[in-house]
Image (cartoon, rainbow, N blue to C red; front, side, top):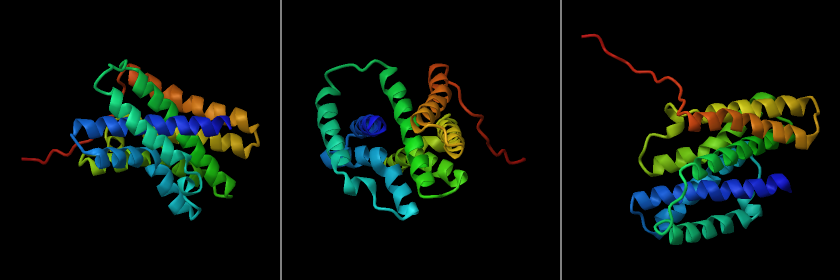
Amino acid sequence: MFLYFLDLFGTSIFAVSGVILAFRLRMDAVGVLVLAAAVAIGGGTLRDVILDVPVFWLRDNTYIWVIIFTCIITGCLINRYRITWWFLPISDALGLGVFAIIGAEKALRLGLSPTVAVIMGTLTGCGGGAIRDVLARRIPFVLKEEIYASACILGAGVYAILYQKQVDADIAISIGIAVALAIRIPAIIWNISLPRFSYRPQK
């Protein structure tokens, strides 16, 4: 249940990022809801489609209501209150870690390999943001220099190893999330990024 409530929290935080971007792009109510839903449940939806299992929010509509209420509350408050700069990225990092572990756990529970579990964890954590950016006609930030997918990969990888070694579930989940946070949060605080590659044609 603790992981489930963290999942709902991550869904809400991811939805907030979609609402903020939609407001910046001056979208209408439908656009706000679409971007919020894309980033909040897009990655998990892709994961479930690939794994050929029932899409999670079709069976538990709580996720949809969390997104709707988040859109309403954020829309009412966004122009009235100033959010402390660190709150959203740090909360996003927590949601990222939770989503990565949930995706990996679902794949492992289906009997798939740790490699596939890491891929599914990364897709769950990063897929929604990529969909949001494509809808907003931006290059997905996960494809640029941000240390984002790396946190998913390592967090999900550590969890998969502990799962294979039959470590207690709560301990494995906590360690996996902690690893993702330990990578993502310093990158936010000190603005650490991966090197970018470019092609310079010879004259």
